[in-house]
Image (cartoon, rainbow, N blue to C red; front, side):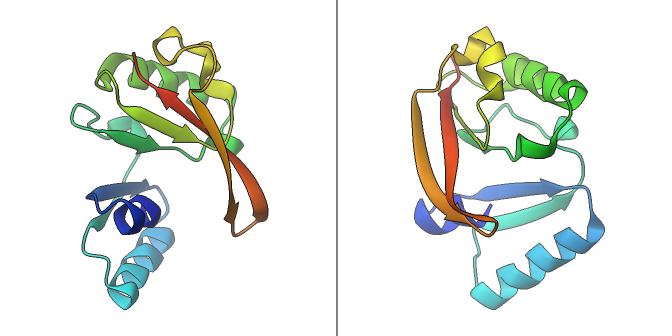
Length: 123
């Protein structure tokens, strides 16, 4: 949520199930003064996707059931030409995202200095 708000200057909403992580995100937002970021304690499966331009996922720990539900939600609700950025290439199962990412990039994250990200374009 912070990365697109800080680098692209676009409003971002982060969804998190754990109250302690929402609290930490809100504290960080205040400390760093990131007005364009907001956080919801809730399930991504309940998030409205109709006006989303960039969807950032963190699916590396998701089981197949959750991945399928999120993929189906993206297929049904995400507008055409929206970008989806994820830590894995598992979204290739959905035709509406194409069978291969439109781009990949490597960037540092807290657990990996060379994390690969996959960028998909919703058709």
